[in-house]
Image (cartoon, rainbow, N blue to C red):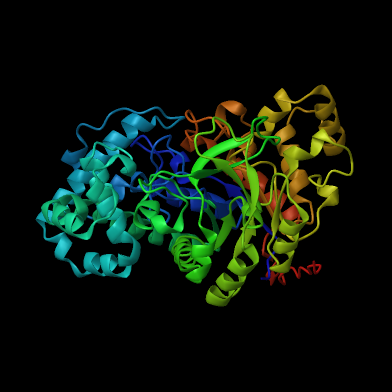
Length: 513
């Protein structure tokens, strides 16, 4: 796949400002697109957009295909007539700089329920638009809506604790439950209808402004998800639906005891027998909400770390081979050019690098990792080659200013020397180094442009709670900031069209493994 030298910013929609406690797809999302356009950035990178559960992590969703209902904008529902001004009379006050997930979720579900009741009262569930959405997305929507309705009827408990007939997906019991709970099931479908309608409109607006969206596919899915519940044969589970082995990574620079994710592991032979049909459906669904995909933990497509269920840490496990070559070849045959960025961080073996090179997938470089070594460190921009996406850091890292404050004296001194910095504006010095590199895409989190410390960090890997809560406020996105980023993009030739001429795509030549 050909790529054009350009730049972008990482920001998850939950980080938008707004009056409803959590960022959403309403007016502030459109203001964000306008800001990107004015800054000369043509990439917006998000985290996964699925419905979040316990811990509020977008990497642990109730569905790999559904959208997050908490991102639905009540303001846009008001504009469409699904809500009235009176429906907002009891809206609570929420903090500006962070998402307080508990109260925000309670309010969002309350206001969405009101919107559904108004919608249903006007025979909205019989509307052609709603019916068309349900039919076009039937493959995943039916299981998801039923799963969430069952989950709510069980007090939010994980599906392994449900009664046997529901846990084991018995058709007669599910049909009876569906007939008795049609309103709840339709409410779940309505929230998905609203999410995808609002997201598609926002995505079209972004495209009109010349902005592409990088989405994210976590390699694993949540144990407590519609995907595992409705497809148990595709995962290593026992007869009661409990995982026998779980996912994680061994000790690395993120954690001395590794990361115990706890996700169920795939029965890859079963997936291969089906022609990777579940995976192809998942990628197709993701490409409906983005233009390129960051494929998380690409290392796991060469081999994955298998941890026996019940272990308290990820230290004790084994590497298991994955049919990654057959998988990517099958996906390529089904979808054509692979619009995929490989998240190839961590301890990467040669076979994983060879797999990425074979399919011409850009990898990732994180500048923050480059200052613990010497001038040969492959995370330093002077050692990059074009087929990479270069970052100051990602959602899993400290902000660059936070990293600089906490780094060793040796690393700080090396960073200042390498970046030609006195440390006063270290985040911008880091951004400049990434932007001037040969990497085809240069990307930084909004927090680094705002020179924020670790109080604005998005995620602490391995920490179960207290993540994902960063929000900016309207006054952060100033015209001066947009111009400063625009100047950076002009200086380092990262605007696809300059002085009326369009860049030719960057020709990336890959070495054959």
